[in-house]
Image 1 (tube, rainbow, N blue to C red):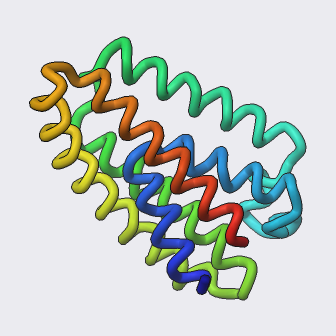
Image 2 (image 1 turned 180 degrees about the horizontal axis):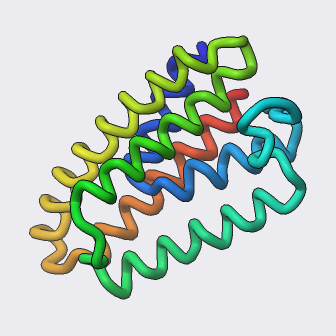
Length: 153
């Protein structure tokens, strides 16, 4: 797969679950799939980063189920997702010196993921009669997409 496609994929994951995307990139760096030892993204490659981001991602999953409508405004959540997509896309792009290009693809993927997620969650919540099972579907899609993106590096 090309780096651009992987940046879009990890961006879509960021649009679903921003911390899951960051955790996946941190694990990819920790396992040696992404060299982030130098530059502004080096914090994602530290030995403790995958653990911290994984704990944050798990917390994000739990909080989403406890309070489906968390207190943040729509704009704050949206821009958090775009920021995560930008960081993750840049990390993937750093493999081939395409950090800026892949940052853009990550942002585009995050926007796609955020809007697709909102549409899908609305439909699934109507089918299930509750937002929590719909959120579990979103979690599974995010984890699967993140694993696929990092495994392809």
